[in-house]
Amino acid sequence: MNPDAELELARPSGYQARSAVLGAMQEHLPRFRWLTEKDSASFVFDLPQATRSSRALLWSPTPLTQEAARARGYEFPPAPPPSVLSQANSKENLVRFHLPGPPRRAFVRTRTELDALLGQLAPGEKLRAKRRLSFAGRAQRRISRTLEALDERFLAEGLAQGGLLVESEQNVQREWSIHGVVWGGPRSFGGTTSVSLELGSACAVETNAHGSVVRIERAESYPPTLEALGHLVAEGLGELGYFGPFGLDFIETDGGIVPSDINARFTLGWSIGVGIARQAWLERMFSQ
Image 1 (spheres, rainbow, N blue to C red):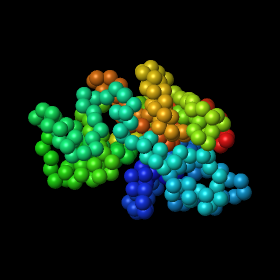
Image 2: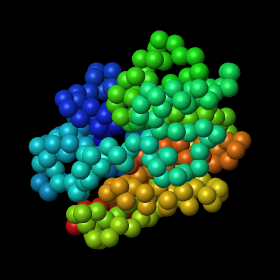
Image 3: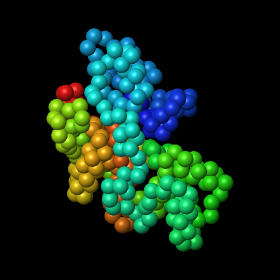
Image 4: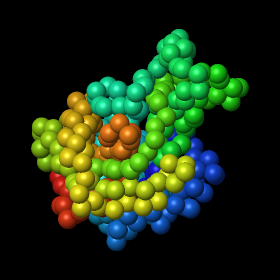
């Protein structure tokens, strides 16, 4: 498990996890059991030496994680190149895939684009700015038309790292997620030479005030649009060259269902969502 994958992808040269990041991983270890269930699991920095013919599934197959698994003698499924991982996890995809959004949602790459968007705001209107590879409620900030010094710094750093998703603040009523796998890819991930996809059932999600997930349950009933949007996102990821597990998060607002995050990797709710298909899908990931 390397839940700091987005941090590595955002800084591909010389990334090294800080002690605070490592501490946060350990603090949230019990929640990773939602994904790993009874399988042996460890964080990358604690990965033991493999026994004979050991296989590993990687939370996100970033270069550092593949290097660590390979050095310790593990086999693991084929993976997209780092550039595809970065693009597939970009917040820009919420716009690129033409998904429904809040009243305002744009991906900005320059200060000129950002200022033009801010200039459209009514007095008192709030926006939320998210860095291109933000995750788990991190690397985002609430802003308004009048920016403070810390706002300016956050926005400048975000633009320097490839851009920002800027969208209306929303009144969240409920949260959902759906999970699946994009099969295929140039190395026939999953035993097929063409891109295909499979989805699990939707989950009801509960988060805390910081946006971190505290509860996930397989939903008995859910809005049918979740599956349609899940297929749309999977197809978009496949067109980018991505193959592997993914998750799509939603918020339900006064205006309807809005996709809020695309995670091109394993997620905490992946095993819960895919249910009885879990073992077969994990085995298929090693089929080449």
